[in-house]
Image (cartoon, rainbow, N blue to C red; front, side, top):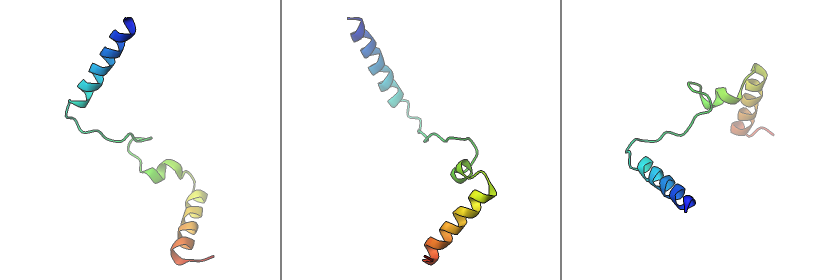
Length: 61
């Protein structure tokens, strides 16, 4: 019986959250930084990425 009450409260909270009308934003790992800045930390990493991009776009083996 207690489980039913808890489940009903959860369902009502979920429904309340859906009906707020506020737009949802996808969560960002680090606020204020681009996605590239989140995983490129060093100049070496940036250089390696640029080399790979150059190979892909210029079809260099």
